Image (cartoon, rainbow, N blue to C red; front, top):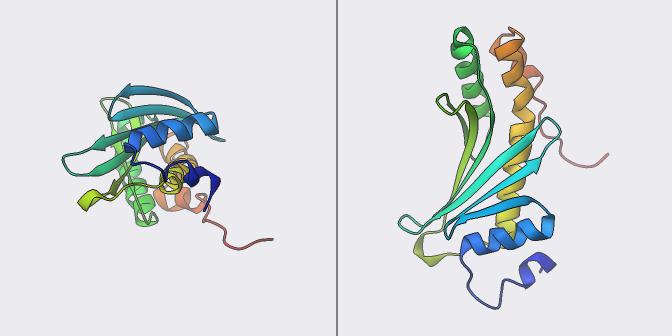
Amino acid sequence: MSIVEHDFLTEELHPIDIVETLAERHEWDFDRVAEDQIAMAIEGDWRTYSLTLAWSGHDETLRLICAFDMEPPEARLPALTATMERANDRCWAGAFTLWPEQKLMVWRYGLILAGGATASAEQIVEMVRVAVTTSERFFPAFQMVCWGDETPQKAMQIAMTEAYGRA
């Protein structure tokens, strides 16, 4: 059992309470927006990502949204859409979408906890890690398509695949 998880075994906690505790431990900038929602900023190599986690008791889902600025030129929208489709095909969990009104690229994921299941601290840390690493992985491809006039195929070649094993 990990140290992270040990503190959470003594009582059932609201998923956002767990996220808040983890944010404090990892020293992530955060703001508890509401009882069921927390917003965080996590620094990546390419940029700072805005993450929001929200609990929906109605459908028992912990939703994560990882967003970053994206205001593509109108003429490049079809190429960006094709690149997002290719990126989403490479994602095992979650998916990218563009929110043009907000000028944001968003990676979304929902952890379904139906039947009274609870999220573990390790699951939440992994959700956050995957959100940031996936955004970091595909950010250069989105940039190349929007402002480098690259084709989706060529831009996706620079989205490095995950390495497995040890060197």
